[in-house]
Image (cartoon, rainbow, N blue to C red; front, side, top):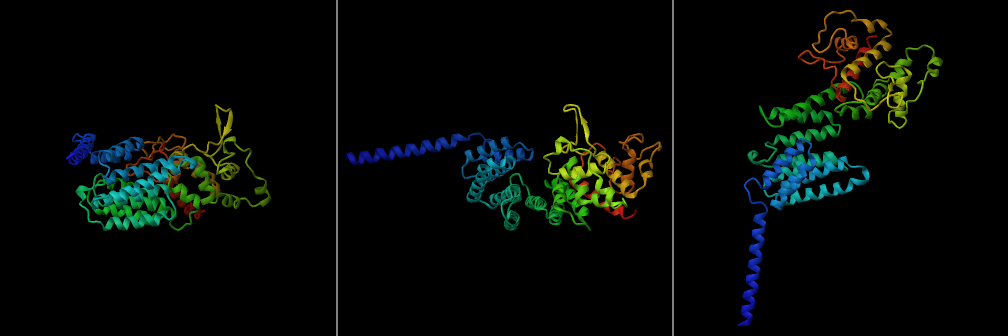
Length: 403
């Protein structure tokens, strides 16, 4: 009898423990909006806005509500990859390992084709950010796998459509410097539906990579050019690197001087203190040697010295001045510098004919080296992105052949 009582007591304890555990599990997330899908969606939206830590908190909550929710781990993997990207070399490994771990969990916990979709897209995104060995090939494998899935697009939380995978594969190709393939993938997104969530993103990507593809058409772009082509904005150091490494101004300028000994004696007047450790030090000294207008050292009030400021962003009006001076030097025609002086009316609503850079802008646009907007605006104060700079260099090369 006692034995039966003991067994009954043990059974009751186990039942009570299970019930208590279930009650505790239910109590973790017990309001309608406090559910894994909601937190995952909010986390992805926060990622889109660049709020990485806030997104991480949302993904953490999603798997807290349901530790079998695969997409939550996929979101955490993306977060960890972005954190690793922003860390210094010695501190990245912890986040890299976490990204790998979360990806494995996302794959393991995926319980439906839609969750598998979110895993594969996350894998493409993580690989694109971290770039481990053979990452682009792995991304292509993930893309093939994700496109084989039969998914209900209405159940794709955040991504909304299969073309999301195509968009992120386009980004992977862009980061992998496979520019033509990137343009094709962005084009596929634009052709997938009349309207979709990813059209605006793909349109922006297509325009960027199309500039790069056009810029590279007929010329060999070196590693420096390819790296700069991807930048959202270029700095003075980048501009100099494009002129020296892609346009070969040293050779072109030297070719305009008949006496070689005269060229050999030429050198920069001094080395600005802020370029001593610059990766483009030699290129900057070359530009200074030839005295390219718009790329001269500038007096800095803080240090009371002339600095080059290689990290300062280049605007469109500044690039027009630089390229005009290169054109003048290569053409050997000083009249170019005053060709549009005296005009009373500017064709651009955002530039006065009396502006200091008006002549340079006119020289660049009338030769199609730089382009205005369809609205007619030149956007003189906008930053120059890498693709635009590379395209301008390519067209300038073509114009050089005229002289």
